[in-house]
Image (tube, rainbow, N blue to C red; front, side, top):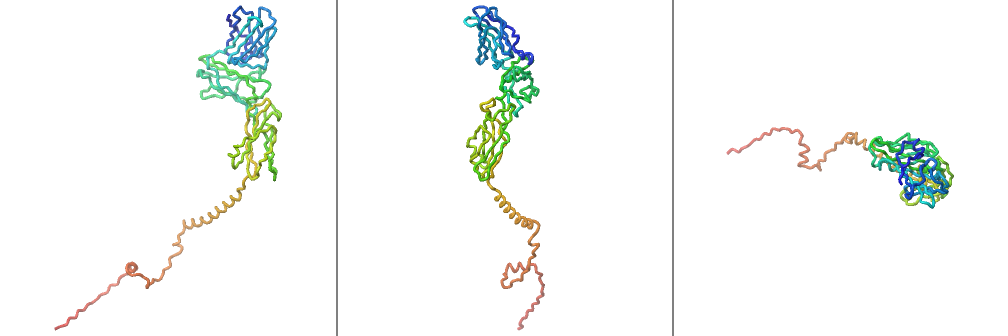
Length: 402
């Protein structure tokens, strides 16, 4: 027999604190006979499943199961059935409840089914905490969501805290909310934070999305603090020290693992072939130190065996240490050579630009060499412009008379 019951306490804080969620609760009893179990209710805040029974039974077995088939069974003598409060089950994929009476065929099964258009809920939801207390959450619009769909994000630290709506939305080019920025976020390691993204549209109902997240798992650790390098003269090693990263939930030193990367500044490609060094304490001795080389140091951290993110955090600012090659003498010699060339060429260029050797040194006339002077063309050329004197020549002809 199929019955549809109204869920009275289905998420007390969903209904009172968030936008209304569209969902149905569908229950079915045992097929052999009418089930004496009725009026099934679920209080999500207390993780408490309750019901009414027209018959008294000594034992009930109740189970809650998500769509991934992760189930939590519980045996009780009477209603209600309380599940561990740390049992976090998201609702947007659907949730199944079962109440059975052992050694009988009496049972009642209920399914929490989210309503709305398929494919209208957000996709690729993710959050990250950085700089100790800042958090960004982003998502993409549902692939089948109408164009006028608008999304709203709510979250709370735990079931016992008040829900908070996003105050600083990240919008796309169409004005649709696709993310949110939060400030003054404090990581509470003992509980999971709850996130819910609702949607609204004038065309159809929009499916919601919800998720429980351990905040410490999404934190990007800041770089280690106060990184120092102390290289003692005439020593073959350097002592590197630092302090643990800042976190909103302070941890002991043993909770961190550090990755140290030291590169040769003159040949960084060669150093990249060597794997980085990983240590658990706050000091490290660099034994391959060569004072004639210059090195670049970076350190980052991650959580280890504690309630900290196991992903590597941000690198520290690069720190240079070591003397490196002495290029000073080469620079001095280069500058001297350059200055010498400049001093030599500059006067020559100026002299050539503004002066002429012919104007400064006039040509000195030389006496003519009569003996070696050539005749012909040279002589004719030499005197071609000399003035010519005219002479009158008289010729007398004498004839003998016979």
